[in-house]
Length: 96
Figure 1 (tube, one colour):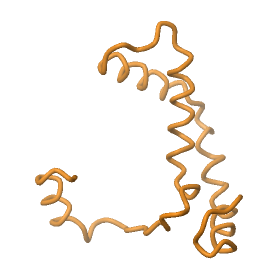
Figure 2 (figure 1 turned 120 degrees about the horizontal axis):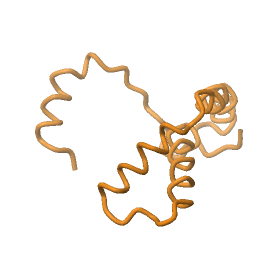
Figure 3 (figure 1 turned 120 degrees about the vertical axis):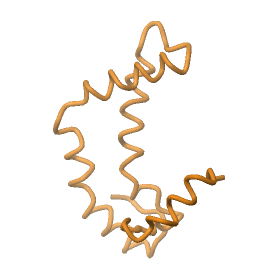
């Protein structure tokens, strides 16, 4: 459920955004999952693990700073293969 203030702001500025309609059966098109998995891996290796929301936020920020500058290059460069796979699967799940 969206927050009313967010919804109002979104409606007011929606023409400022480029909209992408991801096929619902194609989560592999979302490179955010790759980034989330990398950060989750770093957090899981922490000893002691984060115990509070603020501690988790600190760990995530520190982890993000440790991501090598070229890390995002790989998921971005994989997008043409991901799109080709999506087209072959006609919008369904595929392998890239």
